[in-house]
Length: 270
Image 1: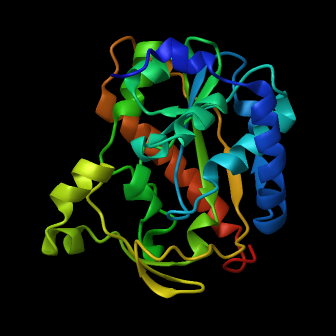
Image 2: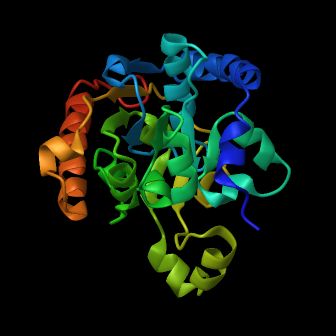
Image 3: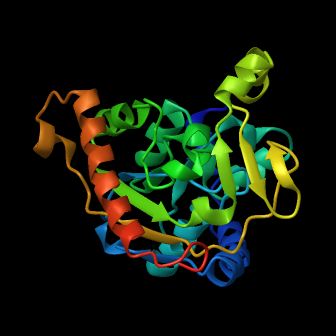
C-alpha cells in the first residue's frame, strides 16, 4: 500500500541531510571538480527544477546540485528530488526519504511543491542517463511529459537545469533496447525494474559492461547551470498545451547545454 504523500514529505530531516551533503561534497568537489552556476534563478517559492541526466548507473547529478544548493540557501528549505522506484527497494527507502529523495509520483510531487520548496526532477530517467556518447550533448526525455503536467497543476514555474561532463565518465555505446528485445528480457525488466533497456558501456576497470559489472566513473569535471525560470501561464496562457510547453523547455535546455559544451576544452579534464 502506497504511503501517504504528506507523511513522506514530513520525513525530511535537516540534520541527516546536512551530514549526507557534507559527505558527498568531498566527492563532487574533489573527484568531479563540480561547478554550479545560476542558483539565483531559483525562485523564492515553489518551483519544478527540470534537469538532464547523465553518468550511467553511478551518477552524482543530484549530489552536484544539492551540495551547492544547500551551501547557497542553507537548510531552512529542503530540495526534494523525484527518483525512480528502484531507489526505494528494501531498508534504504526511509533513508532516502529523510534526505528529500522521494518516489517520483504525481502525488508526492504535489505534496512537496505545496511546502513552497523546489522539487528537482530528471524526466529522461534511464533513457537519458544511458544515452550513447555520440548523443552526450542532446536533451533526451524519451517523450516523457509528466513533469509539465505536474508544474501546470501545481501552478509553479519550471526552472531548467543543464549539466555537462557526467556522460564522459565512460564510453556509452547503446541503450540496448534492441538487445533487450533480442534476448526477450523486456517484460522481465519492466516488471522488476520498470525499464526496457540493456545498456552497453566500456569503462574502468572491467572494460565492456552490459549493465553489470558496474565500472568506476572516471573523474570527469561536471559543470551545471541553472537557467531562468519559465512561467508557463505567461508564456502559454491559461490553457497551455503540454506538448508545446515540453518542446519549449527542451529547446531552452538544448540551447543551454550546447553553450556549456562549447566551453569544454578536453574530455574528462573539462
